[in-house]
Amino acid sequence: MTRPLSVLFMTRYPVEGASSRYRVYQYLPHLQALGVKAEVQSLMDSDMYRLSTQHGRTLSKIGATLRAVVRRLWALRRWRDYDIVYMQRELLPFGPPVIERWLKARGAVLLFDYDDALFIHKRSRYSPLASLLRAPGKVRELFRLVDCTVAGNNWLRDAATAEGGHAVTLEVAEDTARIPMHAPHTNEQPVTIGWLGSPSTVKYLSLIQPILQKIAARHPNLRWEIMGGGTFEMPGVPWRGHDWSLQDELAALARYDIGLMPLPSEDWAQGKSGGKARTYMAAGVVPVCSAIGYNNELLRHGETGFLCQTKQDWEDALDALILDADLRQRIAVTARAEVQARFDPAKQAAAMRAIFDQVLEARA
Figure 1 (tube, rainbow, N blue to C red):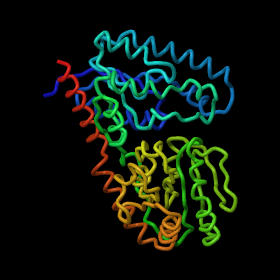
Figure 2 (figure 1 turned 90 degrees about the horizontal axis):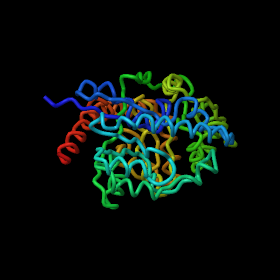
Figure 3 (figure 1 turned 45 degrees about the vertical axis):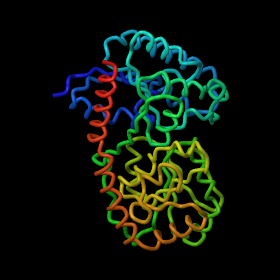
């Protein structure tokens, strides 16, 4: 039997935040079954998370950040009570890793989890102050400082090891138990093309705007839906926008037939860990994605989704899927089965527990 472990998970977001939900929260019941006593402290509470997605309100954001820092420091006062301090992203999203250095110097076992290319400076969509305070060099120092970096894909893992750190890959799980399978695909009703995400990434739909405009003109009965994209609009494509919530996400996935995931050809996209495409796959929605980075490892072209490099690839894939309900159905069934076999949360939680044991054994 493995010995019980006590782990303090320090997440960036509450459960509403996708990266924290997928990288930590979904594993908690499975880790408990594996003998891990987990405590979670989120830097942002739900109110601060909602505030962070709004434009402006700088003074309110400063006040919320100060309160968040106090909460985080208060939680860390008991760091000696835990076998591991598991940082989902940095302890603080600004400044040098002073707290991490202090903890490491006093013997804390530190793991750093990331699923985005945080070492690349990316301007905040919502706050110039947040853009100014971001310190990508801090992430590179964390790679060397912590006992282990837990990366969402191999490209991120290799970036950490290139900086001199010890890193492993833990692919993101997807819980098909929470997502009902799509109804059998049919063309007896209008086909729905959907996109799921946040206001910070909806801009990537513009990368394929000419294709979507051609598809909309060619197939006027299509339905177009965006969830979580804010006020995004596109001339010639009648997008229907919906605010995101965890429960409404399931209803949206049940309506979608085809799910889009365009990404730019840049290093930031290389760091993406396929969350959107994997969610489509789990729901029986056919993913059509940019052929970049981890997407090429996640999808089998023509079997569990479509990988597109050129504009013609996008147009051909969408045309074929719109016209052929049987094709959508075959891919939907295969894709969901792939997620169940490869990304089961209990399986990934066991892999996480194995990482804990390996790190502690190395420190013994």
